[in-house]
Length: 294
Ligand code: AMP
Image (tube, rainbow, N blue to C red; front, side, top):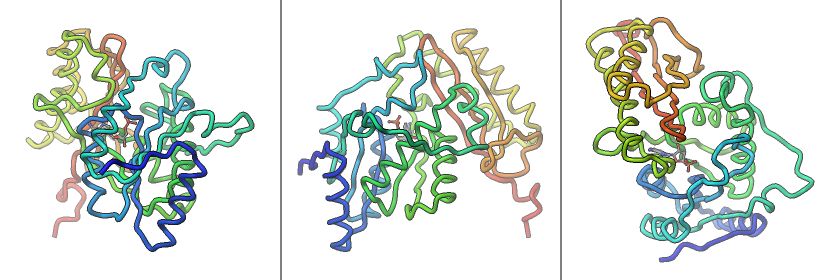
């Protein structure tokens, strides 16, 4: 079945209100389109949990900074439609920017501390753009559940915070990172990579995996884990991966830590050629170190 396509925000909200009134459970997967297996995994995660699955496709202009890739962000409407059809999506919500942000629009949703570091420090205004659009998408699609990928780990943490702080009646479902067979995290932006860039970019996941291996072997010092990741990236890619940050953080607060004694994320961002990539791995809490072991 072809998904129903809705462009108009009011029509979207009306559809959702009607479905909710009929007692149906609604799910939302927000995306910027150019759908790949990472997006599909979010749809597969949510599909069995809901009666109606909505996928939004909206390249949100206010989350792009000056000089970022808004103008060349990849788009493939026909491919996205086919992907949604195969995934059993009920509705594609694809509004125009002018409908989401009419001329009089002047409201922002902003999460404070969680956006201070990592990508938030390097992309001023980015997360305000994300939380503002996600809040609006929630109000237009009225989902009971919404699925976000761990690929954008800070975004997931920020959305969870917004939902808790503002009491959105939406359950946030997280889905793990989908990778290529060789380890590269899937991203719509991978299409920008030349063959040489693509090879260099592989260093990023290799670095994270090397750190995870050292963690599994017992290393708990953040500086050592970061050092291993960094060296692996440089050994693989030389200066073709320009790291913007590589940090070992508390998985909840996203504050940098010295010792991995709780659930931790190692997160990085790098420029490969003109393309900005992000990746991360989660290190599960060590029960012995946290003293929770019986
Ligand atoms: P985007 O279209 O890049 O804004 O991403 C839309 C959603 O898909 C976000 O929740 C992302 O975290 C998620 N996503 C993107 N790439 C991946 C991936 N490789 N694995 C899992 N989720 C992903």
